[in-house]
Length: 94
Image (tube, rainbow, N blue to C red; front, side, top):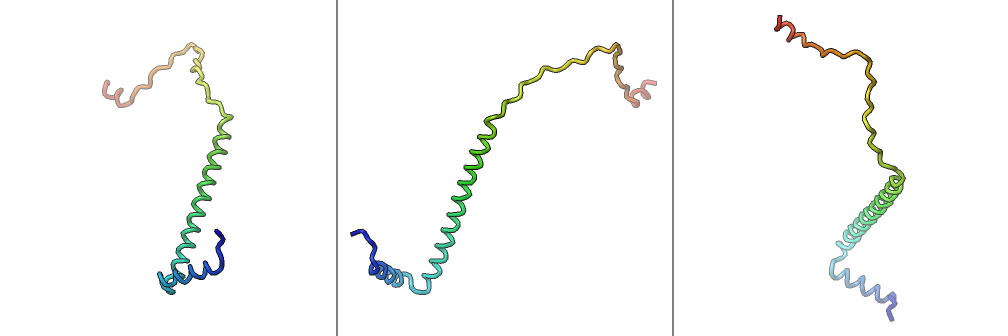
């Protein structure tokens, strides 16, 4: 009952030709094919992006955050560094 028979297809083709005309049908079929190709490429790229994100998330799951290290103090060497004098300031003082 729900099967598509050859005469159904023939009637559909005749109706389409009457509605759109023989000149526009090839252009419509061509644009439909382009649209389907674009949709297929976009859905494939979305699936690839999802897969890449899942792989990246799995790879990052093993990483541990760095623990902050306390600043290391330099041992006292017995000398105190003198501040560097600005040569322009020294000329003005003299």
